[in-house]
Length: 242
Image (cartoon, rainbow, N blue to C red; front, side):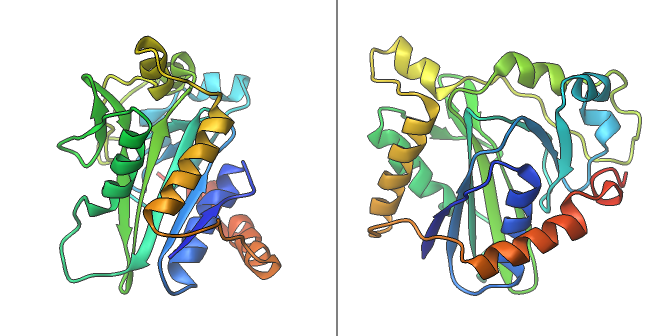
């Protein structure tokens, strides 16, 4: 098992890193990353159904398509993304990959519970959504973790002007959301800035796996990820293909 914290805040780089670790590597990985403000839509979604594009263009928020299905999500510097990548198992897709996340959050005074859609909830609010992608030999499970995200911006960008324009596309399922930092503040716990929280979370996740330190991407890794980024995840025909 290797736990890697991406050195980049570029959504297209981090999506390419997921594909690279999934398709061109062996072994188990956890990739953690924080993106600049952006919208990440599911594999089978239509941008026009999910996103207020006029608002996004006006505010410099780009839209990217990921490998997995599921609904559209908003990323910013207050949101931590986690991605578990491993060899494919014989068992159906389950929720075991979330156990380390639940354990680490519980140790940080954040008692999240597992929802019906393989997501995490706390006090009636969704704090983490997940999606998965399975290839012939490998599988990927990733999710968001709302810590100090701009929820007003989230609501704004994910409110399309003409929803459901393309009927064949998968639709997002709206849920009430809340930041983990708000819960900590409301209950008298320490609520550090996002970067500090993410660093603590990373160390606790390492301990959960019995590891001493984060792993790093090599120069060769970075070069290949950049190539995938340019070949796929910045291209309009991929991001706006439906």
